[in-house]
Amino acid sequence: MDDSKNLWGGRFTGEADRGFVDFNRSFGFDRRLFAADVRGSIGHCNSLASAGVLTAEEATKIKSGLETILERGIADAGYFDPTEFEDVHSFVESRLVELLGDTGRKLHTGRSRNDQVATDLRLWMRGAVDDLLQRVVAAQEAFLDLAESHVGAVLPGYTHLQRAQPILFAHWCLAYFEMLSRDRERLADCRKRVNVLPLGSAALAGASYPIDRESVARELGFDSVSRNSIDAVSDRDFCVEFVGVCSLIMVHLSRLAEEVIVYSTTEFGFFELSDAVATGSSLMPQKKNPDSMELVRGKAGRVFGHGTSLLAMLKGLPLAYNKDMQEDKEAVFDSFDTVRACLGVTATVLRNLSINEERTLEAASTGYMNATELADYLVRKGMPFRQAHETVGRIVVRAIARAVELQDLSLEELRSLSTLIDEDVFAVLILERTLETKSQTGGTSPQRVTDALAAARRSLAS
Ligand code: ARG
Picture 1 (tube, protein in one colour):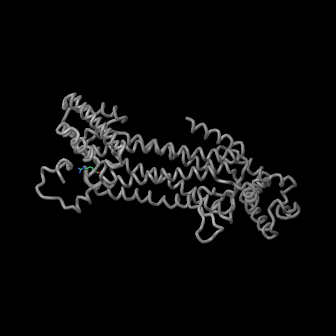
Picture 2 (cartoon, helix red, strand yellow):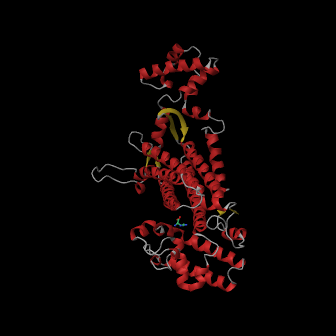
Picture 3 (spheres, rainbow, N blue to C red):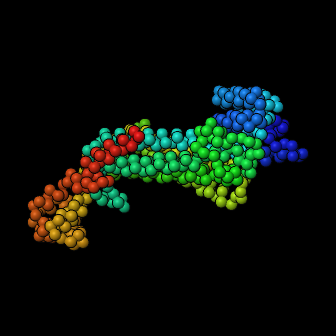
């Protein structure tokens, strides 16, 4: 390895082992930080010029060199040879030295790769968070569009995957909307701690040149500068947080995937996935498999794994930088790629999902899901709730024995189990009534759901 490509040759007399050189290399994956590295370097160059460390002329040359490198990197993937460089930082600096000779060798004054890599990763992650925020919003919009195109649709609500109480389909959509709203809040909150500038911390003790860190922060769009140089180069909490936020998004998408998969079975028959996001079987001609949703459910695990690997990587590290930390990037990059792709596919699934409203209505109308309504009816007639619960339980047993729904039992038969029951009971047992009574904030009554949909739309607009 000739010394223009290696940033630390002087101390060494022996040759590096080729196997180790490959093992040590991060350029294969950290070249993703290329644009961030160039931007950060331009910021650093400006601060060196303001501090009088570089002349104005040197700074101009370095900045235009960095711009050239950025343009070439964007235009030509062949510019990056993964076998030639240790990491993205050595790559950019070597290319600069190739262009400018000794002037290029001045850029790293007052900077270490330790504050540089932390800066690059934070810059990159800020963009990643913004990208995910957009994708979460797109998934939320897909939910709202779906809900609004099926305003009247009902769904059986389940607990323990046993029929519980009828709900509006839109209410079900809005449940996922809420989860994704919390994900947006978490992304925005995580972004605050990401957007802190470590540059100027140098190796660990701080820079010994009079650079104006605040002005670098402003130039690079950071909200503030780190307060402790040791912490600044040691900290990867923001990576753990980011992967944590990604993990919860995956939990939400995976739970949705599970429901869509189950509801699309012949046994349920509530939903049908579009051909655009399903596959067939190579053997069984009748099959339509929900691969899109299965992959979303399956990929959740790899993101959780990245969170675990980051925590394990960090827990035994002494301050400050240790090379273990190079392992942070693949965990973060893959989490981002995975969540991003899953959000995209999920939105596509939702935008093309068919709802069999007849089937869901039938399912929501059967299975004694109005039993609680009957108990509440008895409560209104003066029976204590515990006793009403018991009485309705017996009525349900009777209905099961007759293989009918509660409203199909005769008044006589109902009265044989409680004389409090009158003709007016039948109005209470109809599905619409069941929904309408859930009229408190957060409930599934049509009026509440209409209001909630409007509020959800407003929250996206703001
Ligand atoms: N490739 C390294 C990483 O990703 C860059 C920082 C190297 N710093 C050092 N002191 N060796 O962590």
